[in-house]
Amino acid sequence: MREGEIEDKSYEDVKHYRRMVGKLIYLTITRPDVCFAVNQVSQHMQAPKVHHWNMVERILRYLREAPGQGVWMGCNRSTEIVGYCDADWAGDRVDRRSTTGYCTFIGGNLVTWKSKKQKVVSCSSAEAEYRAMRKLTSELIWIKGLLKDLGIEVTTPITMHCDNQAAIHIASNSVFHERTKHIEVDCNKVRQAVEQKIILPCYTRSEDQLADIFTKAASTKWFDNKISVLCKNRKWLKEDYIRSWIYWTFVIFHLLGYLTRKFMDFFGIQAQFEEIIYTLSDRVTLDLWEHIFGEVLKKSRFADDSESAMRVSSAIGDWSLRDIQGEERETEKKRERLLRYVMEMDYDQSLLVWHIATELLYQSEPATEESHSDREFSKILSDYMMYLMMMQPTLMSAVVGIGKIRFRDTCEEAKRFFKRRHIESRDIKKASEAILSVTAPTKAEPIDVKGDRSKSVLFDGSMLAKELKGLKELQELKDGLKEVKGEAYMWEVVNKVWAELLCYAATKCGAIEHAAQLSKGGELISFVWLLMAHFGLGDQFQINQGDARAWL
Image (cartoon, rainbow, N blue to C red; front, side, top):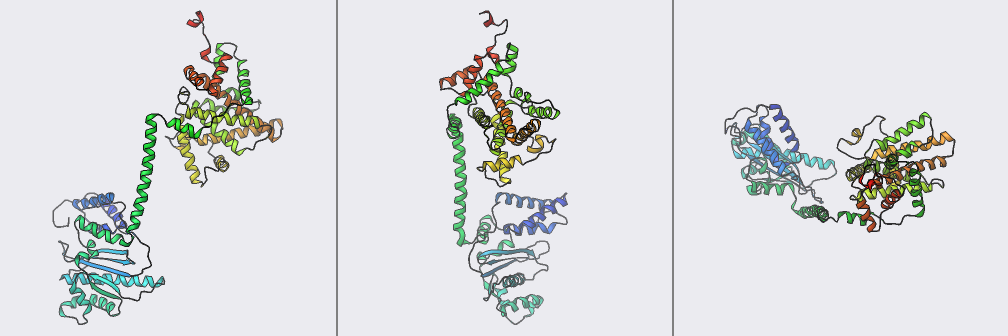
């Protein structure tokens, strides 16, 4: 809608209008398709009307629907310069000034374009077109000089396409007439460039005039046709098809993956599929079973009555941590800090934190002869408990909580961390050292580090690993032992904590689920459950006074 066609009230937020149009002007650097439209709305910056703002909104809607429209630069060896110029004579219905539009190509690629209202009123269409030719002549001379500075010499005349034969005759005729004296300066500029064989005016039909879109509005079909020629070199359309083929291949691949996951979830085979890929079955070694048997036997000696038996079976690592040797103040502080990782966390959160800490210590601490057994047992039990939480949700339903969500968020945070540090996730040792190298403020809360919605415990596990390393160093200072002795003690504590976490899960899981596992060949946790039943540990094995089973 051009000014003067309708009467409308002023737009209230003038600053907002100017700010938005300023952004659109900046966008025309890479979007020639909106050049003319932005030129129209930019003429009303001082006192915009409501319908001017409606024009801005229409431009924004067009940009939203065509975000990928831009300038396609094809690679070729041609440095041929070609220019197109046009003018919309007396197109403005308020002051009847004409609009100049031109564009230039180098090697078939669009490089510059312009849409601007002329400063004076033209008395004829030839005059308006000639003023556009003068503007394009200056642009072509500048481009030729730029290429010369870059070491590219243009020796042939530059073709200038114009759809007005009168303007072309004026440029070619060396004699001034009375009717062209008022544009004598423009005539001299263009005619001089023609005589020096810098430019070569050429007549082009209006249907083939590419600069038309910079001077006037047009229908959608005509506009799309001009833009397709302007912004994309036809010799390189094959590359568009290749890019489109790659894009749709990528989309279809991800769509098939999404549908496959939905199909597997619907039929309940996702867990079985992941179990086949990510798990490995193996027999429990005699050393590991003797170790678990010994830990359960030690705890059973404290179960003198039903109350103490329930207290022993409910331990989630706190018994082993409270049993850390030493009465000094430093030892007491260390004990309290470690207890926070079992007492102030949910069971599933504690499992994941201790698993991360165990993995970090296992990958960063070399094995020694004294710590080998406890180190390997800790690693096995840590991996096994994670397997139960992720692959046996039915068996662990009483204690698993939101473990899968925490595991997923932790994996995503680890991926982002490794990507920022340019670390390959397959380089486990380097990845573990990078996580351990992160230092958090003493009073930092998890929400400050990972956000209020993330359930990640990646750096909680890192801090626990550092606390456990400090336990090793504290034990060395207290007893004056060698480093290997301190490391053996650290792994001994970790091993005992994992044994308690396993026993706690065994007592909380239902008897029906354990029986179902025994019918399939059995899980380690089910045998631990039977072992604890043998020693009378766990609330399900105690008969309180007054219970119906006590009468029997």
